[in-house]
Image (cartoon, rainbow, N blue to C red):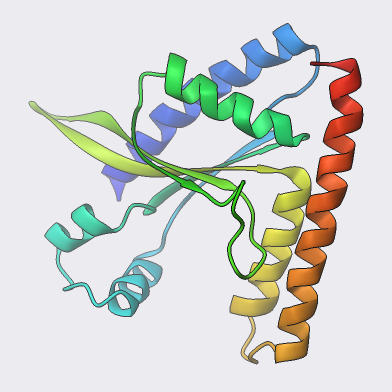
Length: 190
């Protein structure tokens, strides 16, 4: 876990540098927040069992890409793509995969951009490439996602079919609101 934490802090420091530079350039907080987390061992084991992975380090390192996670929230949809472009073009971290739920939301209504990256971490005399998942969302997307996650996964009762349909509808409403606010902003910023 210490290796993942070290990798996460390295990437976070680089993203915080972008956060400062973007604020200076655009004169507003393009990156509103940067939050980090390390999955608990229990959560990792649950995920590995759910995905039918053998419970060993080789399977963990090879297949679980979100042991360390960084979530970036930003005000506007245009900022999500701006941040992705900067990570692709100007960062020292290697992008392994992009999961685009931004243009193609999940069936549940979830929207966001997930970027699986790896960064070198020095461990004594050796260097390990450590994977981290970076999620980029607007503040509106983050509101829906964190609320939906709490309702759906952190309670003991299963969500009814009607409430699941409602949550998908609310995600679509929030997405439309996000688009309208971004469109207004683009008149004045872009």
